[in-house]
Length: 149
Ligand code: RB5
Image 1 (cartoon, rainbow, N blue to C red):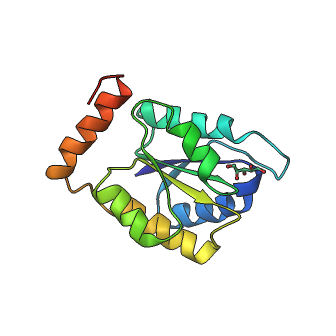
Image 2 (image 1 turned 90 degrees about the horizontal axis):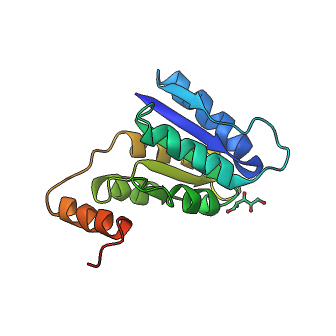
Image 3 (image 1 turned 90 degrees about the vertical axis):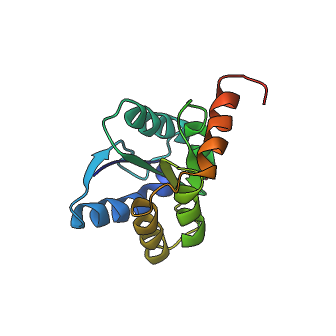
């Protein structure tokens, strides 16, 4: 498995922890920055992770800003991206099972390292359930295409 990982300054410390954790599990990491606590603009990193995913270079993305919100909102502007902000493991599991989320968004100023790593684990190890949820994803794609549903 390969994961693209990106953050702004608000997520930089948690990004380092997630990076170490993924590598310790034998998961390949594509580091999309940022690489310091200097103030940067989160859309740049949400976009870069989203593009890495859409290009097929990685299986999943993880994006982190102060809250997880802005970086997720940005990634979700890209057609095909389904970024889920998660602060606990139930949302992480459901975002995969029901919504086939392909990017996990975390808040570096919200979620502590221990909980964040559990969330990462659940997100990466839960499969999409398919079935009735597939039709709902198709509706989401129709909205992305500008179709009326
Ligand atoms: C940066 O101060 C902060 O706005 C950013 O990390 C994030 O929380 C935005 O959603």
